[in-house]
Length: 274
Image 1 (cartoon, rainbow, N blue to C red):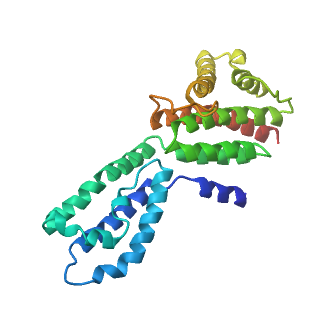
Image 2 (cartoon, helix red, strand yellow):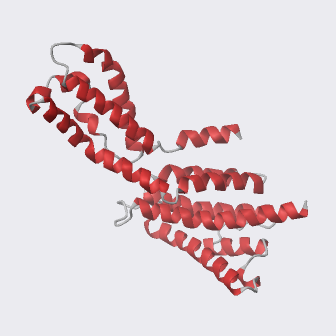
């Protein structure tokens, strides 16, 4: 369990709130340096600044964002050119203008994460898988891949969402002692998993419940179709046009909904029999 948590932390995307704080700290050092003429007080921050810029650049790239600090790799590089921008107020404005885009991008990531927070749902699903099945490794692996892709690559997120549904269906079949077909389609796997749990729509008398289960499975299967068209499963020559991060999050939420339902059903049935 500890090893799984360690791997989760290793691949977990950087927190955009933390990155925004780092951007503001680096900006404060630039502003201070731009005003430091007649003394060399800024030099004592040089090493920390360069280390911070390097780490921030790496973390922003993991989110698919470009670092604005490439124009100021060191405080000395800014100190030597700051006078070109006129008064202190104009220097401050120049720095803040250069940083405005990445700040807006990070603020959008924060807002997106708050709206529905698929990352939190992934962690909850991981805990459910740990309780429901003896060997949750396959499900956890897809959860890690999905979370890693959510903030930067919609194609990979869609592919991981499809794989999550597939892995979950297979662990359910295995838990019920049923043979797991090697080459079955995603619709065949999801249908077999529902049958194994005796919650297939065909066996449900209540129409609203039947419709919800049926439509949830159908939508989960559509994630597989989207993966075939635009995901990362077939080595596309170029990134799929028109796919945004929100599409990856949508695929994640759809996959989570179906997987959570079948894993919770498995857990409740086993608890009732214990």
